Image (cartoon, rainbow, N blue to C red):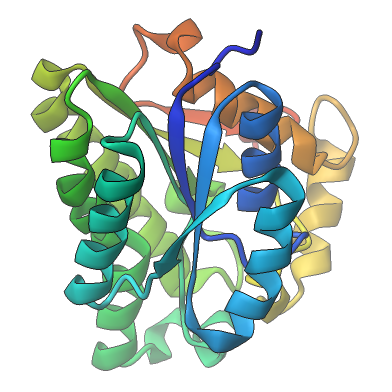
Length: 255
């Protein structure tokens, strides 16, 4: 019997088998949850459906977080399929490639707004849609990074968006707490994912964690899956509004 046995979990943000969201979906399944996945566009659908089949997950439909109709459609599907929802994972972020390779000063108004909408506001929109389905309470986890609280070279506008995301976590925790819905962020170390491939000198960021963190090694994706599952489970029933680091202790090390 797993720690989320019988729970209904929506995992948003699986792009391929290297996604941290995929590690979370795998661990949730291993711990007894029923998992639903979404996809964005035809290309990602071709990657997500085989992964869903691998763990017996339900595919709840297409989800572009900038489209309210997509959000409404996914949550209507979950209500019809499961009758409700217990857990939700938000692993969605975007910044234009040029904004992760140049000076932060050069980010345009349009690109700044787009990064904030997709990387931070989407959590608000999805939590609002999830709230009515979490009638007996629930738990929401989103993915952050230390660039939210430190200036990390080349992370730029994404760091600003992650800072906004972590603020959203706190305010959502305040709003949803009376309904016994918890909201937390998981701040992971650099991982080789589709998203990180856009960051210039990503390998330098990852190497620094291995060299300077107390544990002196790279993060394993399954460690993110396990901690996210704990945060989603009743084992963390008294934890909300927090950012929990899974970064080999790197965040405690001085400059």
